[in-house]
Image (tube, rainbow, N blue to C red; front, side, top):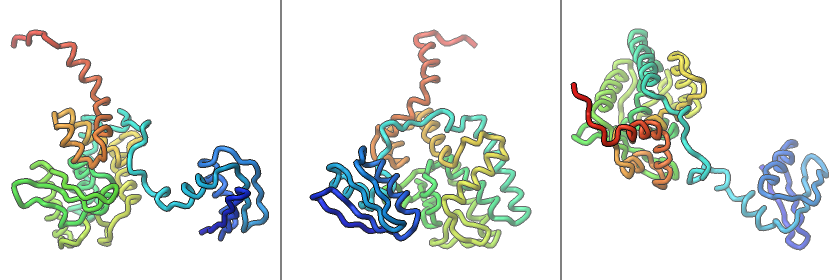
Length: 285
């Protein structure tokens, strides 16, 4: 919504804006990239002149590059998962019980959204997919006919494709969900999206987040939980179950194993307890 002209001689740039409030927005964006301003002047509602010291290359490279506004390709070095974002065993039981009740109500009332919410939560807990990956899944992405079952993520973070292995329990859930979809009058054609609205349309990530929040509220869980908590839960419980960390990295679609290793910090308490029993003789029954 804006274009600009630059002069490297006097380090002055002129931004032409299409909206009245755009100069204010631009000022805050530029301020985050440029540490010091010598002069800022709003000539009118359509033009913004900024005089800055020696930041011509910084401004042009950071403000006007499209990829700067896209999702970062790697985690921030300060990011780490926290216990408050993980659903522990008791909370998982509560959530699964509520969603199971939703499924029964959905079958009885012929409401696909209730059945879908049940499958959505199971999908997150058994695969650890990102919400955008969940929203993009189609029927053809369920590979559940052969011996080795998996989900195909065709466009993950960074537009990367990967196969996510699933266990036999979730394989049964997938079969049941497809059967219920067909029973409720929704298609199971290869190009049909797995998570759909009551009208059969693909759901947005925002809609999935809202659906999860309703399930979590019904289960009495804290409001701090988001649908991404299912991903954190999957990673934490996988490591706790003894899944190889290199295999988990591929499952999660992490660019670096260092990101996967961050989940080990959530198991420190359990590891400390295990350390206390080191070299102790087992109790006699």
